[in-house]
Length: 336
Ligand code: 9Z3
Image 1 (cartoon, protein in one colour):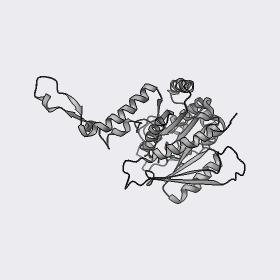
Image 2 (image 1 turned 90 degrees about the vertical axis):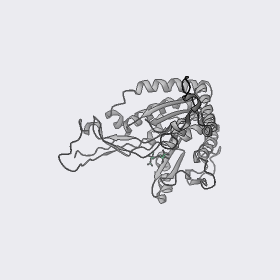
Image 3 (image 1 turned 120 degrees about the vertical axis):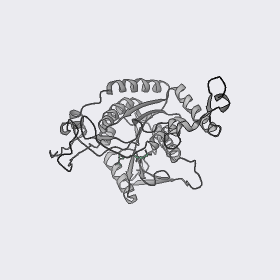
Image 4 (image 1 turned 135 degrees about the vertical axis):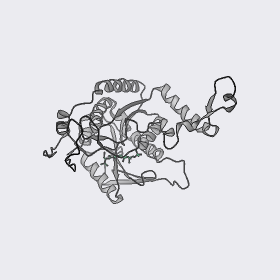
């Protein structure tokens, strides 16, 4: 595959790459969800979560993936719900989801929650299944929160797999949410590929190994934060995440992102420290009612938790608390 790389703008991307088959159906669901939340006067946050794939073949056998278990997004979604937000949870298929994440297959297997009552196995009645006593209190807490959210209808879930699914969905969902104006927040925690193979350059069938090594030249995924800020959303509060493995790059890259796209906050996280340390990077005085005296500088606020003394604490609790406060200030600013 030696075709020249193409430089895609968001516009040329959407003009040449096909939408996912379920887009219209997904967006109809989002529209009625947003209308219900608007009628109830709730703020809505779009949480994106999990990694995107880049298929190498049209009949996909192989793909590249971006790292993310979906913990950040699923955990944050729960704290947003707790804070009274309605949540549009747009996640990679099979990545972690709010509530069920507590019983993910590897960390806390679902079957370990259950016990068979031994006294019933030898009798003629059907064996009874119950909850393991030491797991009961936690399960009750999770289940209660889950049932409350279900009854209130404040969680709506969408799935993506490829980076193409993600981009189409993100644009359409953002446009739907923009009716909420300042009451909408966009919390972009998904790990999104920077590179992709345009459909026109993909091999239809499984790439054969007969020719020895494989050379793939990928195109750059268009930078979608710019149109997201300027065109798809209206005064929404946009939070993106910046993932680095070199700690020294976090702040300069986060600042550059705000400079370039003009959104409200970048949360920087180092891959190996992300569970206990993040940094909020924003423009100084951005949320102040008065912009007088505002310079063009940035401010950084580090959030840290001490996992050695507080094993149960999740950093997403503090991230969401801080964002709810900032978004509150943002919605107070007279926008019209
Ligand atoms: C993140 O940085 C997320 O916090 C993590 C969460 C992916 C690290 P987990 O799901 O991990 O809890 O396992 N997400 C954004 C990653 C990303 O692709 N950012 C782009 C970049 O860094 C900008 S949109 O360039």
